[in-house]
Image (cartoon, rainbow, N blue to C red; front, side, top):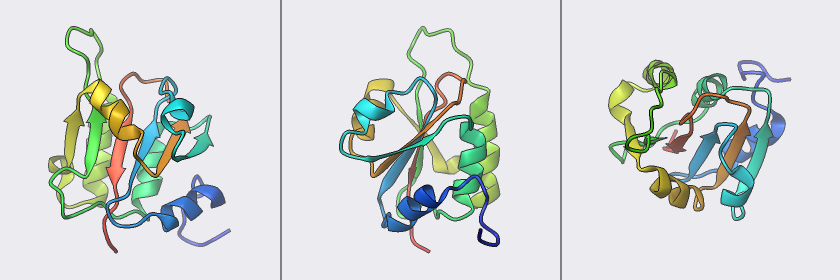
Length: 144
């Protein structure tokens, strides 16, 4: 155990977060995201039983967001015509604002299939048990 490290961050996840360098990206994926097929060239860490918000909050306590890009946080856009609500995004905005002075201004959206393509190039995909739809979030690492 370590002091001041959220206990949800496992040793393997902490190791990966530490290994990542400036501009490396990670995806915190909901339970429907094809983590294993998208992550063939990435490290895939299973966090089944946990939701995205609790992991996002814990990760952002140790993970600086990139200040050299306008939107270091990206959400998977809802497909046009898909009757899905995304109240979890409000939770994400609150969490990001707690850890980054740009708040919601640091968050952008990527079209669904473009999000998948970008996910093939991330350093790490964290697979969660999140049941909310369109709950995938991509973070770009900054400097300490």
